[in-house]
Image (cartoon, rainbow, N blue to C red):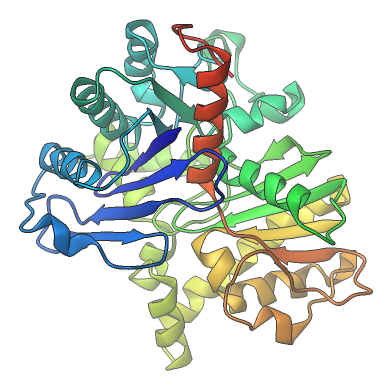
Length: 401
């Protein structure tokens, strides 16, 4: 069975083809910079060979053109036919539970859920509509970033708001669930690794979150109703005084949309350091730039405060770093580990400084809290869920898992 996995963003589409039973994708790629002057296609097979030249000239000035390009890519001669399509969708809204086979009823629920994730779900819905039209004879399944966190207890999800508000689905949902689930799976499958009863997973990338996992299940996470909450991120504020939002809304000319753009797209590392690319921030900070040094200090300080607070509450035996920054930025990991020394975390500097390559331990052998780096494999998790759901309910419209 061959499963196409699509991961749409506001200006990019990641795609990969998975064969059931094989650990690595047959091919993967990304269309980036959609709608801009720097739009480009990356497309590689499992051996890392560049296949983008097979497509010839491409035009991806809009999401519609990008979707058409993806169709051309996955339909090239010699590539396997598609048996099912899986999508990463950020937010299912208040009424859908579990991953969902896409039906007219489920699609309507997703359209109603757009206010929960207005920066993410519209692009996903546009892609789903187009791909379901273009590949009408195969199952299409939406996998949500929130599902892994459905095991959180009520005390970890409830907001201190009136019931009249909470009854409309205003609660903590949590995100990066597919990434966290992939960490759990890899830790269980790893040879010679004792699976931690309690661990903290720090997914650090453009978006950042920290999740507490006990016996393989999410019990607490930092993101909330939307992916904006929690720790400071690349372009998002993370948690701030709600009064700040009210203050911004009262400014002349302010609108809900303008404030939303600010706290989601012009805040975080970008606001303090001028950019949100961690590699460039490190270069500028090393060259003595005070602005970027402040941005990095605030970023790691926020993470240490959050992780230490969760560690005090849950007493984890392991901390796992994943996501683009978590996997590749040794300095961020080192700063966090220093802040966790009181909990018994002792980093092995040489192991931490090695280039990223698969699951690896970066703590000293006698460290009471083990430290790991684990790659985020969201697409692999989506492919697993799609395969299972196709076996479980080949004709069960709306079936969830």
